[in-house]
Image 1 (cartoon, rainbow, N blue to C red):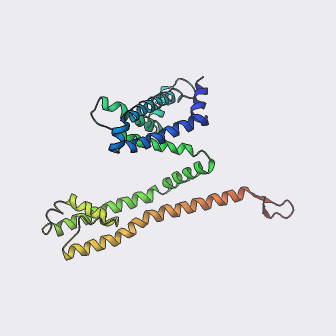
Image 2: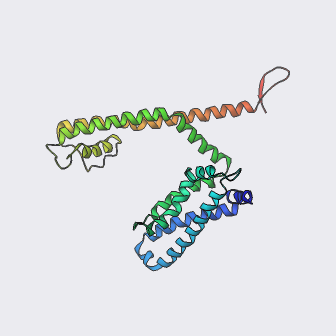
Length: 258
């Protein structure tokens, strides 16, 4: 019976489409509820739809925990599911409804995280293969990305410290501390440039220009690392796929495509 239930919730197309449709409708309802005129007129509809959705998601969550032990009654397997990424997302999908009964905080916005489960709708092999490729690429370049993030953080600390000592006397409110200058460093190094905090001294403008130019390179660096790894992975897959379709001629020994 447990196997049948597991197969039903994981492979039954009607059930999967129903859950995904319910997720999308919840997000739409959450957006519409933010409009005061709609909330005032249809608040009862939003409330009953919330009750219905939470009831479905709660039952689904506990069923998934119940069927997560594939071999026997193993609490460890159930705990592994409960603390897995999808298990946590499932829990977050229902917690915002129950937590306000304990804490006077509206946490329904957290339900948006359940949108991550929409990735399950991409069951076709080419989509799941693409997701696996992206995951593989991030694992392959995590060392290079970590170095880039570390160097960027050091540069931000250094530039914000220098800017604080340069601009503090002229702009004590804007650069009241190194922490305040850190916001300028983030906006400048990422080349966003919000314009709410900027230097007014000549030396400060010079430093700001240097940091902005360096930021262009550092923003492009992670993109280049990921792009090169992605291209290398795609080319490797193409070569591997081509090898599978190649055969040797039994007479001359040359390779040819099937």
